Length: 449
Image (tube, rainbow, N blue to C red; front, top):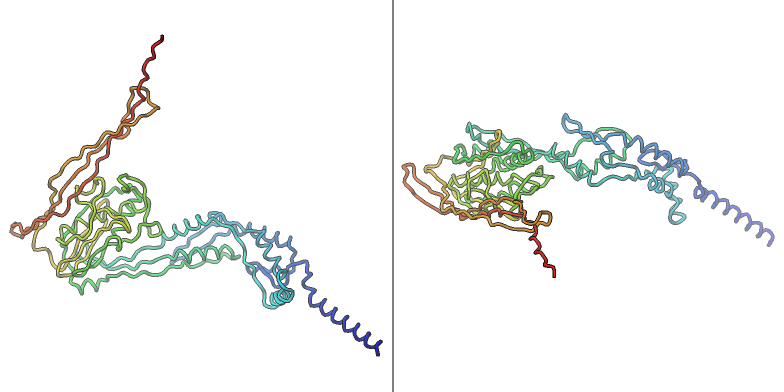
């Protein structure tokens, strides 16, 4: 009996050993497990070196294959090299090789079996420049996105200008699609993630509200050679055009125009910050707020919030400007009339026209005058400059005067009789001080004993 028991035990152990060997045999494979792929390219059965060679070849093809996006009839082309794109060959090969070779025994066996039956795709690991990706996304947004245009009335003809639908490019989704495209092996064109943006005011809204008459208009000029500033002026004008205000409603320039950011279509141009002209995104938006301010003054509406610039401007008289800084300084006015009014703004050539429309023309005349103007002479700032010779001096910056002014709004009836006179503002503009650099004082001669 003992002999037979020994034989049975030996056979059982042998069978178990053979079973374990066959079950665990895949664990000792010297190639990538069957069913494993990289971005849908089968690499099962290849050695680690063969996978590395495949990735090297693939990288050459991927770098020369453009990413194509389409919107309507236009195709946009992005070159991978413009993103500093490359495949992280080492990290990708490592991820492929480690599949099924990490973790507990039965977990590994299960992964290997499932890959052979169902397949398993290892993501292609890539490198790219995040800043360049953001820049390309912003450029596409500038080309594709556009704000909606409300229905308005023409400042020249008085006729209705129909509304226009806008569109917005989803930058976050676009960047995700660009990265997915870098992992693809085909050159298929992908649709840009664009959504429509609908205008607030339609032509039918204008008809319902009975808005048809130009109440007041003001015009300023800008330099069209300054391309970026011109673009900001046009964009800001477009954003306020067609804004409808019902009686008692307050208009906020910042809320209407929105943040001055490149992602919103604004460009870098000169603006006044802390009393100095410096480059900044959105330079030019204050010309639109200032032009609107004058149109509002001439329409007789009440000002709620307004701040003058720190320096005089060329496009409006002293005391007639309105500076704005998003989330800091705003221009606001209220429709204190008994009927709805609408803002219209348009650019023609080098002229910015802003008007206020209502149901009827004003039955009075309004004049804006500047009084009590005082000149503030610039100070002279002297600084020592060791680069100059003793006794030598140089005017580094020629000063400009500042001003103090009082602005008054005068309202008369059609017969010319004065009905009301109100002080609109007392404004002060700082001078630009003169800066003169002087050479060092001559050294006194030393006497010899």
